[in-house]
Amino acid sequence: MSVVMINGSTREFGCTYTALSEVARGLADSGVASEIVWIGRSAISPCIACYGCQKLQNRCAHGETDGVNTIISKIIDAEGLVIGSPVYFAGINGALKCLLDRVFYAGSAGYAGKPAACIVSARRAGTTSALEQVQKYPLISQMPLVSSFYWPMVHGMKPEDVHQDIEGMQVAWLLGANMAWLIKSIAAGREAGITALTVEGRVRTNFVR
Image 1 (cartoon, rainbow, N blue to C red):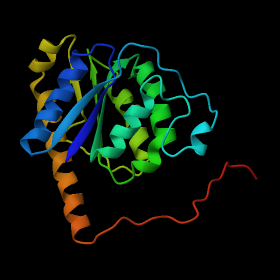
Image 2: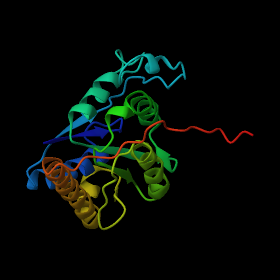
Image 3: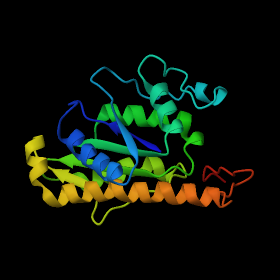
Image 4: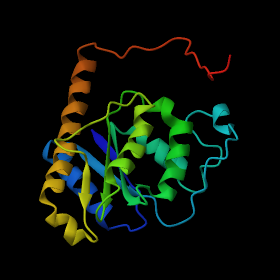
């Protein structure tokens, strides 16, 4: 069992990484491995609505050069997903948004039933709106959303500050532990013959009469 974790910060080992590392510890304490994937600092193009992905299977038509398709493959191969982001003006990092728009539009058909969790990092405020923004991706992709005993967020200007946010670190650890429990529960249910229901002939409306 493994979980892929997306570090959506431009700083590879900053506050977001610190939070994800504590989630990883919660997973590891329950016997689930994880991998933190950093989005880097190179440009990530936004989705251009070319719909080329609709002709492919879980691939972005432009995702071979900027790592988008690599991340799609990692999510499909894993049992769970964790997304971490710093807070920029009460929202998630712009580069992460570009990546998630494409990762989820092109590949979400392969994510259904996989538990997902999100965590955000800020100096002071804007965390709740950023958390709500990033949670929209798994919530529209049939991914059970994992929770903790408080909203998943940490505070601090540098990793040392985040380590002093004891409650935030406890929240992050429990987020990982709860994800491990849910992953194991889903696996046990599958072994017992419990399968997910599927919707035939999905209907789309555009609110136009």
